[in-house]
Length: 344
Image (cartoon, rainbow, N blue to C red):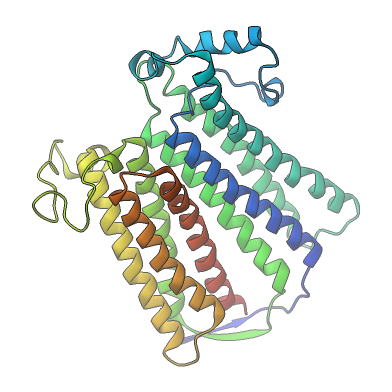
């Protein structure tokens, strides 16, 4: 069964699309910086949220010592970093400071051109509220980031993996929504497209699977679940880890038990690979392989390979950072393929 889409033809808006492409790239970079921040255990080094004054790092030794003294009062310092000297603290402080600074930069790079385009009345009809919504989501992401950090400053030496997953998912959501608008503005829209309904549905299912897998990836990161069972495909003697059940319910295990969380993330990824493979097959069975589909096929294989490599290397920082970037790139390529399918 095919679905006909009657879409009003519109011209591309390349200048606005370039601006949004830059913003999308900055969000992708933010995800990579966030991965390094987490992997170097730097995320709790700044214990206060100062949206304006916090843009500058400490500028003298007295200020550095004051920041270090605040960090010494955290559970993470007592449990993990009690050995640190000021020189060690400066290294982890850098990554958290850069992470927050990059977030501010994204806000400026998005907001200032938005005002410019609005003043010059160059924003396409119907996009004004969408852009304001993206700006609001970006602001909310800053609050969510601090909400996440707060969970590691009270009575535990790490952030809540639930709040971490919310923070990462919100970044992916902002990236996805922004990229979808960007692609449409870059290409314009077609007049009429005939698309098999089954292919469209499969594409949306693949996007949902990628999103869910990203969430469980954040669970893995937050619980340090990637540091155990560093083998593939087995987890211990079999495919299912012997300590899969430690909670009263399976739901509790797959969301809080590190072994079960890693198991779930593994098989979500494999399921995502299969669904994406089905989507690619549906896209290509009646015609030549297009560039967007070929790129998607290559990226899903690369991303699964990076996930396995991250396990086998016991979460090497370079591999794990590439794996997080790969999740966003895969999400972007799938969005691009789906957009071309239904919008032309």
